[in-house]
Length: 397
Image (cartoon, rainbow, N blue to C red; front, side, top):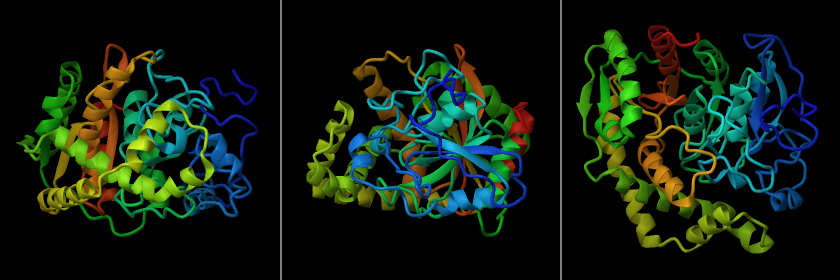
């Protein structure tokens, strides 16, 4: 255990950045932390890379999302580890070290918001913020047995958040309890609470593509939720295949990543781990024609998915096709997991959909999440339904 009580290596090394509440409200008495990709005034946002930290000074202002939580009575107790530049789903960082997975010892925590997930799972804080581009909140939540949400694209201000791929980035949050996830949403989300009155739509590609044990473990949860909304309707929404979605997503992400941080990489020549070096080289060499095809695929996917959800329907799917891989998993295994995971998680990102993951089951002692996905703008209704779903499933409220 570290001096600050960090039993799992969740926090960024060094003194903890702390901020006291700025008022009293619905979050009074709660503590939270934020991924080290979100600004706190006076602290350097390192993004998990020493040369980023070296070439950037202390942040001049605190991100509005943090300020809103402080004004609602919560206290910030530190910054948590991210993978380098928040570009990865596994959770490893060669400079700060990888947090352990409190809910599945010996397995990976997931990333990029690995530290935030680990801190909540280890009960070091009540809730935590993290960034989500390709699943970087949803996947760690599934691996660590937590509730989490990636909101609709644009639902939260990205001011004070270090962008990776601007048209794909979002800020989400983790909690151990469904109602707490809802309470944080009541502070951070604005707008009307449009109802979700439609049916459950079972995303068949996600269920078929999931590891057999994962699908079987989650099936009882699906059946219980059918008592709330009636029999789920099975739909195949990716006739091109999840591999095609993965390919288009990675090309689109790579183009935006290089446009966002490529100039800094070329100017600074930073030290980077081998995984990030490989990813950024691929981003640098991204084919513009392939990126154009990826944008066309995204528009087609949105035209296909958004009308199905407009009336208040809910997509339901495994959050990740696999439980957390072993900490010692090799590159080939991790590549398989990455491709299959983004092939599912990328759908919500590309369409800008809000997605809540529930800690609905376990496989060989490792948690697996069940995702509920709604139309853009229905975040608050989705969080309310997630509480109803948690009650039906006997999960912590």
